[in-house]
Amino acid sequence: MIGRTEEKRYLQSLLKTDEPQFVAVFGRRRIGKTLLVRESFDYNFTFHHTGISPNSLEPTNLKQAQLDKFKQSLKEYGHESSHELDSWEDAFQELKELIKKSKDKKKVIFIDELSWMDTKKSGFISALESFWNGWATARKEKDIILIVCASATYWVIDNIVNSKGGLHNRLTGQIQLKPFTLKECEELLLSKKIRFNRHQILQCYMIMGGVPYYWSLLKKGKSLPQNIDELFFYDNAPLKNEYDNLYRALFNKPEQYIRIVEALSSVNKGINREELCKKTGISSSGDLSKKLVELENCGFIRKYIPYGYKQRNCLYQLIDNYTLFYHRFLQNKTCDEKYWENHVNSPSLNAWNGIAFERVCLEHVYQLKMALGISGVQTEVISWQCQANKDEGIYGSQIDLLIVRRDQIINLCEMKYAEAEFVADAAYDRDQRRKISDFQKVTKSKYAIHPTLVTTYGLEENSYSGDIQAVIDCEDLFK
Image 1 (cartoon, rainbow, N blue to C red):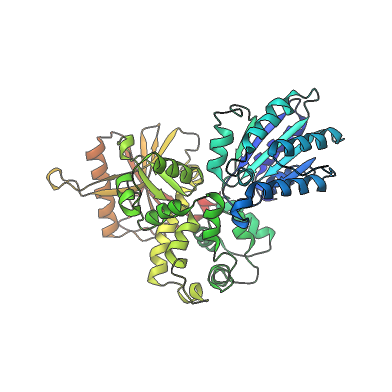
Image 2: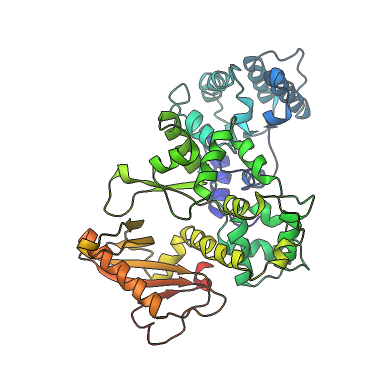
């Protein structure tokens, strides 16, 4: 298995504990949660069950369908229930009987896609609470390891991690599985004998992000454009309909979530709550706040407060690579099966490259800090912007990445995608000087400002490159 070293080590350590363990593993769809748990326990479970997606069931029969599937899983692990399961209390009672009969030294119970089982008025959560609090933790043997898993990150956080009911503070551990880094994606390709250079891997990451499943679909012997066309643009492309599947798997009623990400996809920079309400037609309310938190917890958007501003000035920005790609190229359902091959170096792709590269850099801030030699320095990573004000000599600026350091230096990062060494010119130099001037005038910061260039192939030395204090290239992002 590629990556996940620390997560796997932690899960395997549970087998050596002397207390019952209750661990939640969560993260977006296709991120590798199930594979991590299976590999960590070498596919050996006392019981393993996966909930059924509600999208594949009749709305009038959700609870019973989930119970019937649970009964089937019990049978697969050697327990024949003598009667139909009518409630989740019945289901967990049968699970107790299976555990009692098991000769496993540690009883590893893995319940996957937990959120799908929590159908309306099903009583699932209360039955799970009773199973864990009233029975599993009360066993003299203290031998149960319960691993629960779900793609609906917001559901896990609300109902398990931050539970205000019977599961409050009952977790003994949690793993929020993050997307792969560029380096891990490179390792995955090498394991599949796929030979892309690092620039091509970067381009692929700009489309798919670090979602392992998407990368597993790439085929060796084909170019990157050929792979992208086959995955996204062919008639039966495996990822052509991933967008709808992605949001419907995460949210029971995905329509408003989709409206939010659609609105954010129409602007490259972040927008405030008021603008978001105008674009979506969704009123500003507690329900909107909840949906924004859920999208942030799932890794689709980020909320940030520009440097020097207060909470009420926070902005929201779409950061999910695949969602950005979908709205730019797939939403209009192009009929060109060779779209990516036919549009290499086109103005539309070149414009998108710059936007997508910025998102990749924001996902690799740790690598940026490593390249700057400040991985151990306390920092605040933020964005900043200001409106033009001619009376005060302020031009109006947007800075996507500031690394504010405890050693009183601020790295003002400019992210530039290029097909060769980046060439600073008079316009670039003027833009940088204006940004620094605006920042110092508005924030009154006394920190030293270090203009920092993050680009693909480094910087060509010329008369305009001297003021750039640090250059970070594509190779640095793979560390």
